[in-house]
Length: 338
Image 1 (spheres, rainbow, N blue to C red):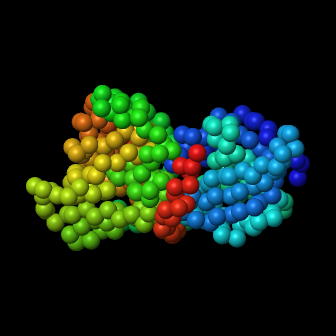
Image 2: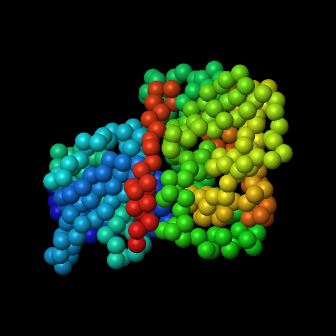
Image 3: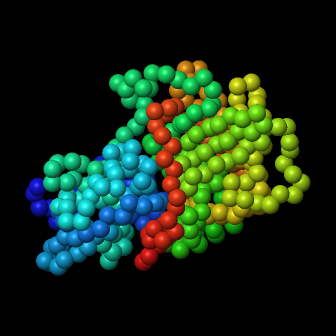
């Protein structure tokens, strides 16, 4: 393997997509890539992000240890990784998006190539390949395992930046510091509608009096009551709020209120949510059963000047297993270190 040290490259479209995978992506320069050869000194197979330390030599001959962040273990597992993929002492070639702070040897991993030629990258798969016979069948109902197309996730991230905010919303966004204020650094899950565009597997379970909507990140489970009840006059706010649902033909309507305040680093660039936040989602199965279209409306008049409407598509993934994970608080907070 040729020795490459600190070469700054122009990022490709693939690099930009992979870089968006990270909840602290704002601190990385996604328009450039550093590439270098080095030796693995640490491989931390933990959630919500796997960390890899690689020691190399910089242009002045000084030894530098880079801290590389990558995705969560279920995503890496589906991309061909395991807890044994790397061991200290492995010689590797690294490509990564560097931290915007040039004083930090810290980067978001794009790919890592081992001496035997194996290339490891996050999200190096997508379920709906036409050549895969497992994708021929569709679902007969909303029930099952579903995945978001990662390109849709990144597109939604960009659209959110264009939301019209109130003065309070603008102030909230401008005061947000991803290194200090991120709820995810405290293992606090993303509420709706962010959770439906979180790039992890989802599962829907249909029961007689409720619908369960699960996301494998934080082993999250939303309960949607479909027994005809209304929202209580008083209800204790929670992370995912209080959800009721009903059917309009084959479309499931989910109405959610009573959210706890939350400054999501993925949606709204840290804009706070208010006590009047209200989300309505419409889940509709495609005719061939391969997709669920989720049309949603988000209202949050304390921080948003107008409602936000959008559509998310989930793809049927019956051959994928919901792996889930427990969030390690120490691991989750590591990226907040200056």
